[in-house]
Image 1 (tube, helix red, strand yellow):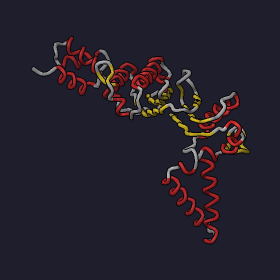
Image 2: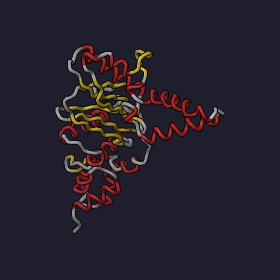
Image 3: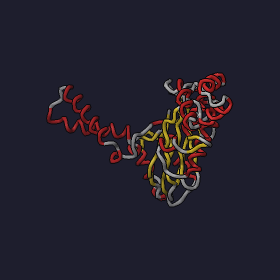
Image 4: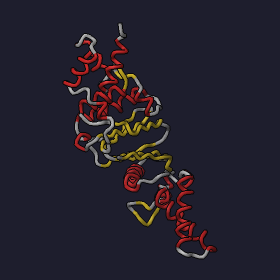
Length: 283
């Protein structure tokens, strides 16, 4: 006699339905695979596998936190309509709670393979794909350990107080948490969401990005007919401008274009305000 676990696996492969749905369907249909497939199709639960190939460019991002970790999650859907639905938002919240309950730093694939009810988180995704009727993809999972730092975040185009289209997250230190420091941290989060820096400072920028930009700018300078003896000087200026566009500390502050972020922070020296890291998660 075929093992029930093998039957469930076969039925899941045929339908893409969740573990529990397959188990129940087999029980109701005397372990007959074909009848179980038909039953799942009638219930609309056998569509997940077909939907997983469809493009999912909408969705939402969310933030969750406990005493140990802060979690940033991005789940894509096919339409903005689905992303705004309570079913989708509740699903996103349940994923966040699962990560908090696990309470460890794990990668995306590890999370999808975690036990959930009698299946896995991946099975949970399949059941929600069938329920919502769209492809759903766990696109990003960022888990940060809460240390002895201060944190701030900003949500753009929010659907709920912790869910929206863009989330910027800032980690910083200070010797005196005050209203001024709180306002600064929130304004910096809004700046990050608007200007989308790639790194905190030049030293943190991917070296391949720097080399690629230097090569492009040097070719542009040479092709413009500039004398070879001033190419390096011009390149230095071009790269300085590039760094001012892609590194947070060197960007012009959106609320005071005459100052860089570094200069703004220097104005808070009495609070010993220091940026430690940031995260930006966006659709």
